[in-house]
Length: 556
Image 1: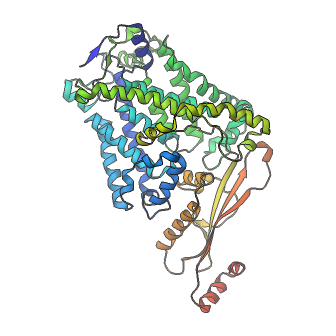
Image 2: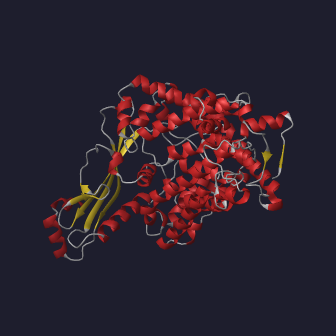
Image 3: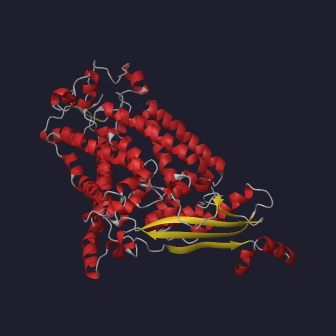
């Protein structure tokens, strides 16, 4: 093992703030593997739609989306999934990712499994960015820094094979030494960046006045039934809004206080676990809350595991002093061997630079403007809007344009908002298809057409990624995306239905109900995304069609 005692005051401070217990890293490793496996399971049914050229987001469309996200450095974005547009290739990559995730879960060849998972997760995310969420961004970030942390040093196959020591949760024979690497610093910093900069994005009038969560819980496309319960208690909504803002802007900063740091970690863990469990109960937003819960595992204090091992009292867990720790070390080893041979220090230096890079990237991306209706959504005068944007423009200087390619290559390019500007509309969608036999079906809900607002937009669209796609189609300025999605749904229907049930006309309509308190009772904004009718070969075909579908006459 390559280690040295942290003799100086500065090193002790770094260990307090950025050190991690190996058992916490082991749980984190298992959680990462599990999250990747769950992600594969959620994506697998929709691989054709989102990863092949047969779907609406083919490789050309994906490249256009990446240009929107990365601008001039989009050319540096890479993805193995771009090598082929065939389903078999995408399935093969997902199988490899799944095998690597299993290896990561059990801690077999941990570093190599982490590397493979990072490569394939970045590749997967870059292939279809329009369905990504903050949870995906966090997963990419923590996987990158995991390559520079000893995830396999405890409760792993590697540990059992290399040291003949297999720790168990209730094993009190050994208390492992806390470790400090650039990787552990990166894991903590990445988590901080997600919350703090999402809190900065929330620094606007809706969050200050406590109205933001009302807007969020009215977003039917993600809201679970429990959201409607919260809407019945306006004061509680305001308290939740302010508490969220406080936690993200203030409380999270205390992770970097070296004095009694385990206390601050414990308080943050309890607050954010309560936050994410509440999110999971009230909002259907994919794996985001669960990935976030896993992201906190490296910060679990050593005393937590020692308490479990001793089966002591709750008070003994909170006695988070140095007596509960082993001898602290600063190390770059993984399971007692020289990490990456003679390149271990070079790797740690690189990871340390990337920790700084992530902070600068997020600082430079502090929002200065979201879209053309930002001023209206924040209810600002022209003068107030100028004052809102001007100081934020200075933050863009934190990241020189010439260095942004690094974020594109490493997958560390990120932008956390998490409802920074609350949604001001709740959309629903109707794919009004007329069949050859005259029946009208909604190709999205797979039920008879109704233009009424559904009881649950969440249930009207199957799958989180399809919901995320439709939500993003409201904001992405990509020409032709709505048309490609409509044509894909049309092809899917016709391929699975016999003659007489084929689609002869399709109209896709987006309804956006404004959700603010001032808009209650107003009609929704209606926009037609797609309008198509099957070309007819003969007059006889036209006569037969109109006989079955007289409603089509005005459009012909």
